[in-house]
Image 1 (cartoon, rainbow, N blue to C red):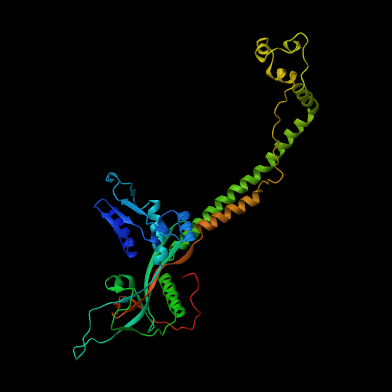
Image 2: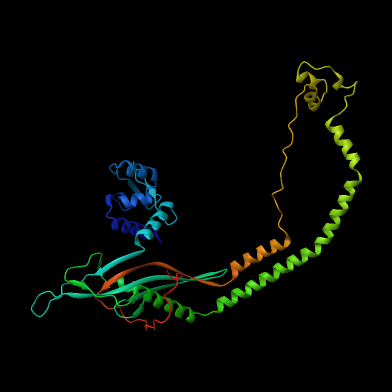
Length: 374
């Protein structure tokens, strides 16, 4: 998405909420945010909680957005909008929140009857859905489906979104138009969409799944070889640790005596430690005394080492670590399919979508579509 496209998207987003543009410039524009937009992208939740609680008048937030970092307006506090900006991500989230599902009506010129009077025009209900089918393993490939389902007569067409862009749509039903009844339920429409998704997956080459499983087997073989080699080395390491433990146990008395001597050294009468308590620490150091002896002689306790309690800490066993690594590899390489709903709407149309590739209505004997589509 280029910067010009970013600006067009933001302008369309603001126009949807009838935002007031205070100043428009080729490099920037200043806008007064409506209530809905301010709550989504204004970043002042405490202000809105205070306004709603106290029932106060709303003070609109005025922002200036620039789309070229080198063209900043002088005297105005502006914000650079680009595809990776945090404010742009908030705008995308707000668009998804308010525009994930719409209801629109087609509006055409007045149709005249034989007597020269306008006659009523029927509008056929269509369910439009944009779906994303994701083929996932250690790689990813997305397939977009733009489905349109006739709710008056069982019929489905593809590339429905491109057809809608060529129509004049309005959120309110125009005069001299009326809507036809829906003979196909939403559950039946979802079942038709599920059958179309399954048909699309059947047409896809399944080589990607076989290659992913091959890579998974290779990674599993490497992992097993690593832990088998680790298991062979463990007895040698245990024998080395046992030898070191025996060597340490042979001289416990010697180590204990050394520790006692370090903690409670005997003062040499002829040495500097035999000197009576010095007047100051500097004089004691000047006489050649040690800092630790000075602290003990003056009754100053040394800081004890902090004890570390490791009773609750438990080291993972090799088998547990191996299983965890295997689960991670299975999650990364195992092929799977995810179907997600992007957006959609209910459209009442008088025009007929072209039959680019239609799916015949299949029998409705199967249960409704599962939640993996919606």
